[in-house]
Image 1 (cartoon, rainbow, N blue to C red):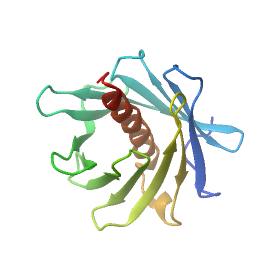
Image 2: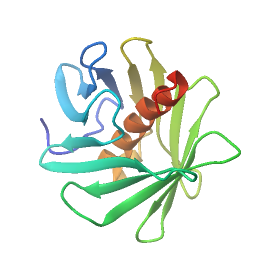
Image 3: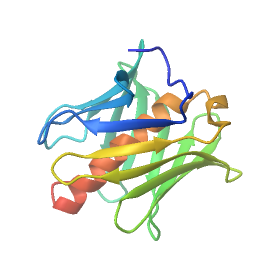
Image 4: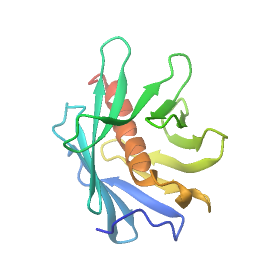
Length: 170
């Protein structure tokens, strides 16, 4: 596995390793760039890895759900994703005060992330019913964002969580 998400081809593929398995890989051709694994089929806890870096994602809250992002093993949030109450998508708030916007379409077949100024970081086109997969496209300047690896993996996580919600399992 490489140490970061290198944006050379500007398109990566994300796929579930097997149907009904909660393991996922982000791939650049035949090579695995990053992984995402859930504790179980019905758990919202997941660990993402890219190179030596590992992050823990977890959905918390009953009435106002949100997703926390932490370095694995840490008790401090790096960021929190707040889903929008009235629109699709939401906002990722970082500890340093920066924000990233996540947008989805009604069918959950597209997810995109942009910075505070509206500059696109990446777009995901999702497909599959029994085995989720997506293509992740990056504009030329996306690699300037230090958080890019875990932001991409967070969106992969959110796709799974939203699919679980749609199926009634979340």
